Length: 81
Image 1 (spheres, rainbow, N blue to C red):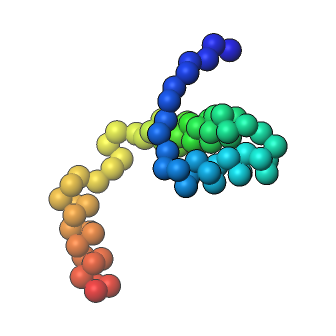
Image 2: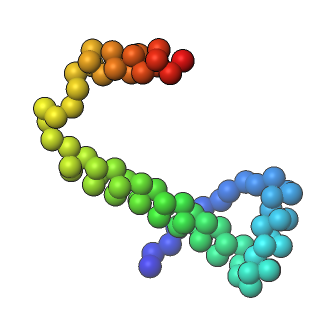
């Protein structure tokens, strides 16, 4: 795996809390941050995959035109409000 070095600037209190967390988890500060970033990217990938799956099921012509949609939304809002 090729790696790249980057620098982040954290408030001192955040840095201290992360160092304590790294000790508790028996890892390094670098490992802790790397895992957090990888988790964030995995969540983002899952969201993209889910959206792509939904878009694949879309069939043109099955939706409502804007005026019909708006009338239905406004009608429901008026009845419930």
